[in-house]
Length: 312
Image 1 (tube, rainbow, N blue to C red):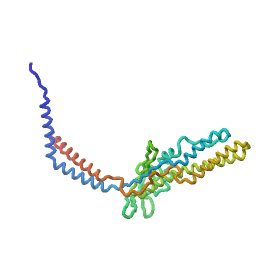
Image 2 (spheres, helix red, strand yellow):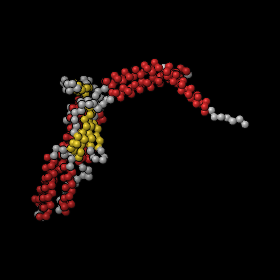
Image 3 (spheres, rainbow, N blue to C red):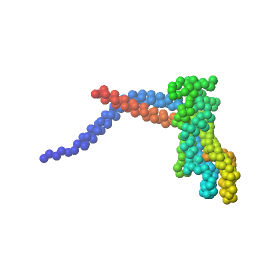
Image 4 (cartoon, rainbow, N blue to C red):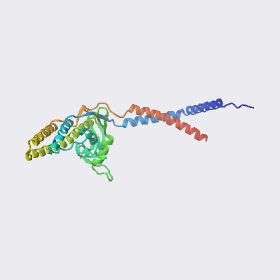
């Protein structure tokens, strides 16, 4: 009976021969690979040089304790107030800081507090920033800086002057990012722009406006509460009730005082935004390296495809 031995050796030799054949094909097409690599490298270098520098201004924020401490103090008096027949405004489960994190990214906040406080062409019509003269160059096909008029072409639902919704989408997708550290609760706000000055300016504007929004809201609530408590003091005849109302009124007056006195009402800076000297992006060296590698792979693909296509 004849034994059949496995043909692993012959298959291995055949595989080696195929690999050698591929290497010979690649070596034979070295000029094609060289031309593709040079072409892609030059193209990528030109492309990377035409990319604008983007600067990022970053602010690290912590929750200010003033509004939270007043809220906790009012909670301590809420039970006594209910026994006295006085209903205080109910405090939400979330603090102002927790709400503000969501408010930062909301359209209503952008429309009411940001849209009207920025120079809109800096968001939607910027072409470049001149670092030497610290001047902005706007796209003439979108915005005429000499006459301060919009000249862009548009189609429905767009308008000649960009709407708040269009501006919000551009701002949120291209310029702003917001993250919260779940361990310590710190919030990191990042603003990107071609001008490092504008990046810092917008970061400051966001923090200032979010503090102003909640300060104004809580001030109105505190003033209404004080007015209501004063009315209760006037109409009640019970001494104990007056004492309770007087204590609550004192807390509301303290709250109003802190609202007016504290600049950092919801968020305070751990690390304020600065005008960055070093660009955030693009990484031109990495782009050029990737272009070089892609050129080699493209050249090899063309050589192999050309050889086997002609062979068939």
